[in-house]
Length: 248
Image 1 (cartoon, one colour):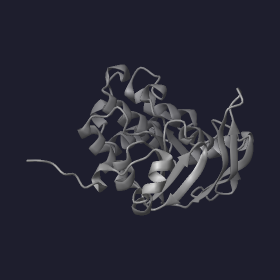
Image 2 (image 1 turned 90 degrees about the vertical axis):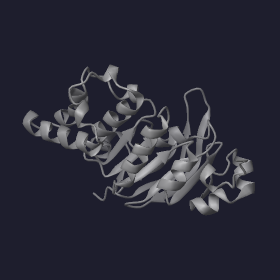
Image 3 (image 1 turned 30 degrees about the vertical axis):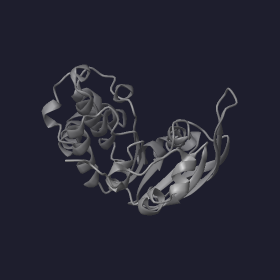
């Protein structure tokens, strides 16, 4: 299976109450790309992410990871390939200790506990959180929880990282550490975010979503210099691209 290509074809999704959250979503993301999904609240970003590893099933169209459709019969393989970091780390951390949380995935795959310990140590080391191994998860800061949640995702050795608002609730230093860490990863990265500065720094491609559809798909430079597009989709230039006039 070629895990690395993520493709949506005519993807539409209606919630049980009839609300149409996605309509005709089509794109292809290749191995090693870093892509940001941006748009106003309610644009469909999180709903789209939940289709990429099968938490939601398309009402119409399909999502494929490599050669496999995202479907009930393929979820085991899909979820090995696609690791998801949720917006709220507390939704991902549910065991008492950091070690137990990071080890949960590998142990569920049947990895012996001695090997799982090696995986946990390596995963925590990758995110700079080895010192947290014996801590209780409920006593961690927001930045520490995000690091541990990411370590839990990495422990599953995914090819693709799907992240929903990874910088939310982080203080400036924790945000910067996260950005620098993500720069070191060779995974395919798909990031839904309101943090447009992070998106422009980390990603070579921006997909703009608006009212459940793709409004634009291009480089950060082209997206954030299109004043008409930004106005229509409720976005603005990242601060790093704005000319600020500050009195000294």
